[in-house]
Image (cartoon, rainbow, N blue to C red; front, side, top):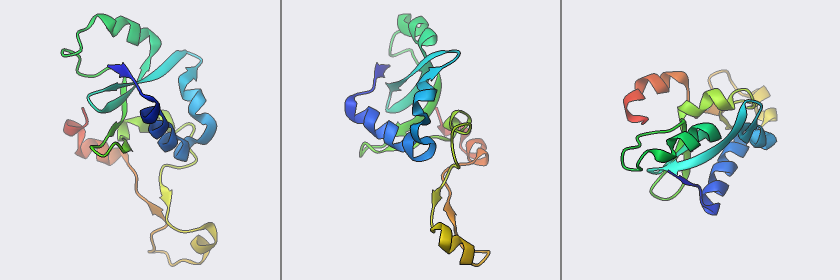
Length: 133
């Protein structure tokens, strides 16, 4: 488990910024302690500093996961958010999806038209629970 590089941090924060905006700082500096992002086997974990210090004695090869998996990097180095991050993003998010139409178009569109592209849902977590770790 290692800290994110500059490029990896930028990719993660750009993705998080789409959904929670400037509230990214509230994820890192929480009232219950300081949290950070760490990379382990192409997956980004959200970990408290206390837990990170305690896990320093565990060998890297023996470590399966630490903290909450926020997402992973693809082979082309694009960052994809995981459904396990929803619990942490929900209090700060305006909504978890990407708008397919503008606000003006949404008012005139028929009821069966696509307005928001799906990003993740709780059912997705249940369907793919065995592949998330």
